[in-house]
Image 1 (tube, rainbow, N blue to C red):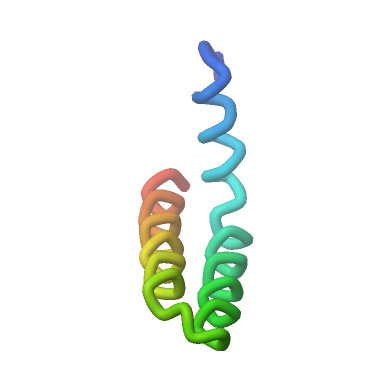
Image 2 (cartoon, rainbow, N blue to C red; image 1 turned 45 degrees about the vertical axis):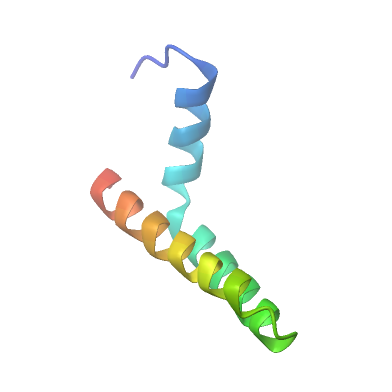
Length: 59
């Protein structure tokens, strides 16, 4: 595999560890929901869903 740019390498690194990112985003959303920041918690849930779908298509 040839990586042509830095952003491509960064995306490859992020998408190769997508299960870890899902757990991280869900944990952050629970923490934000606990301190009554519901919009931020929903944002982290959406980020976790997007990461899961992209990682699932990647692998």
